[in-house]
Picture 1 (cartoon, rainbow, N blue to C red):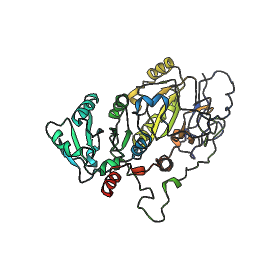
Picture 2: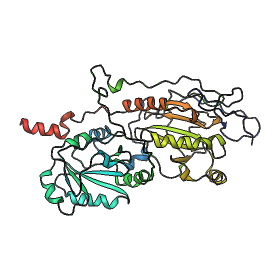
Picture 3: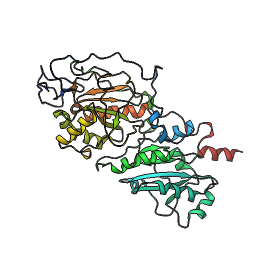
Picture 4: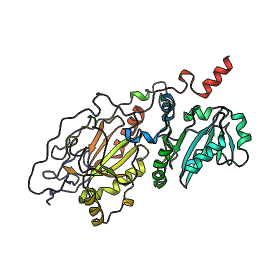
Length: 424
């Protein structure tokens, strides 16, 4: 096996990737596969639309993930997703707390919390007891009683409540959370951010262990959801939809990879996930194409770990190797690497579905970032990914993936329902 002679200077111009045969400023890479002889790598294939309809489809739940989500009305899910990725809305002052002390935003920090809504004629106690039995140890359950039959909730739950319950007679916090009449759950991660909404029983079982295992740096905090017209509601603030995607124009060395920025990936699939199957939701996805035998790839692991811990709320970082599983396991053992050394999910894909067939990557490590609509937004050596550019990508992704459905449209929402009752 031969390897290209590479120089080691890091943090070059953003998105510049090259096998350092003619320059002394490139971050080190290896050929994407150990090769014998001087066979030329395949040329980049023509770009094809992922689903043949010519449209971005980032809002749809992937087929493989569908079982993890409860069936919900489109408007119900859109309202819930308004908060996905943002700090949990502040509990309102008029909530009545049963079964324990009131929770403020700070109380959600450093724990995984499932908020389960209950209400109506069915027994809130029975519903919460059922959910509590299904949750893994370490997950906190918080019941949220909607205004529907809230007047009787205190009597039912006052004695031996299965968990802490917030009774929301006004519906103000329910509206802020996007909770309507159908019972739903909202999963809050250790930063205090809304990570998942509307999961099924299978979804809770699949997603919660990974959240419990996450290590969160103390400096990482959930971010406040901005107003629709800007942070302070200024008269000259632009609507969120006006936020443009940043463009990174530094050239991609054709000897290293094809330039796929602005193109749509042909789906996001791998042969096998080595652990939990991650759900990106509306987050950006950053794929680190690497291999166990690649020295520069291994050197980048701490950097990607750091990015995961700092930006994991907004970006799903994953590592994908095109090694066969047996070779991957041998390589991990040889390099004394353990799954716990990685703070981000790993996968193997020997077919090189994205690496070779789409990006035509010839030098690794190589990172590509795409948004929820499948459009590639950034490419480069992972060590050249700079925080100021990450911030730009996150701001654009948050603005452009924000659901447009109004909570109160068509009478939806407890405040609207109460107003309608008063007008009769």
